[in-house]
Image (cartoon, rainbow, N blue to C red; front, top):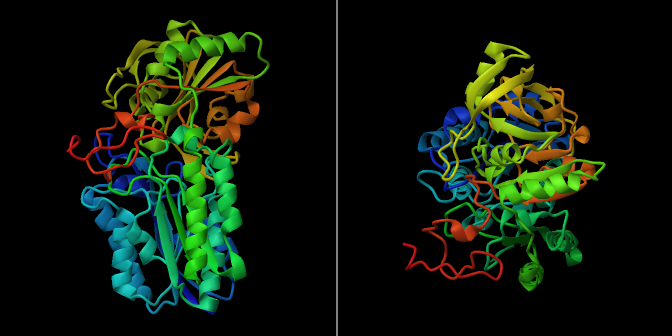
Length: 505
């Protein structure tokens, strides 16, 4: 039996959106559990679809689990100094009180940047190592979009990354982390640790593992894990998060094991495969007006909805979830049977609730996030349906989670309906629409504020999927970001220009 401390700290930081992510945002229950302390981890995380959820299911029942703190701030602006110090302080403090421990599992993201630290995860791991020393196994799970640093790879003893984008294998990743930890408890600490950084950034749209080349890369990483003689504990491909302005931004291959030659070979083989596929990362992206016109054309003869991804306003990549570019394009083109979701505007939702169902309200909807090129959409809307924002998700990506998005309203203008919520949330589950009486399968056009996660639940019902470039905080093309801290020579896109530190300082 081992005493295993468990916890988590997750944030995917878009360094280019205004503001900060504060402590209250980490503490709040939204599309994921609230901040959990001690026993609350066992109350909230089982079945919640997170890495720690899978770890709890898979770890041997003979072990004693010592719950620390788990929290997720989703994706957004820089983590405030206060939020990072309070969250990490609670984790390290709880660990100190739980001592002695035999091992530690942490559910991390891998792309956290704070007001003070470029790499939040390595700073947390450094503090944990300062508490427990070098001989206590530390196993972590990471998001597929992690920007892994050499320090993180060195400070942990195994790193399990998601295999999927859309992220439908978070629990399975936690379960693999449990297996890795059991291996280390049985065989001892790994003697070999390797990280290989890929020399180009991959836009999020191209990272989808439902299509090539990402699908094949992930399959290759699965085959490599285990390795000859069981000498590879974990082999992870992390595709990176381009909206992060830090030195080690970009894709990585990370490997931990018991034989240096085997670990080096596995990492080098996978890295070489990724680099050989550089030219294959590509997908068409359309301006809003063209996307709507194309969707309307397809919808005339389609038996299923045409889906448009409003990729640059994806809150899962730090978008404000309130831009009005796609709404304007739909209305200007007189689109019918169209639904936009989810648009986060607490004031609009409040106004709708105050007016009541079937009332008409004249408001400025969305466009309040300070995004360049975006303004509110002013119009007269019918309040078609109201909701309290509390519902249970059932799809592959967000399924199992109880959501609380605050007051919600279905607003209608002409042939366009808008699913409006008080809190930011990526469109990733059909129940988000059914909560307000919208059956997604019955619509002609669905505009979803998401980049890839929507595909898990919506691609199976789509006639066709289009990707649109309306203004938003998640700029799809990394060449447009005003980077200051990248490592010199990294290509800003596959086969794209190299970043020049001198001319961008």
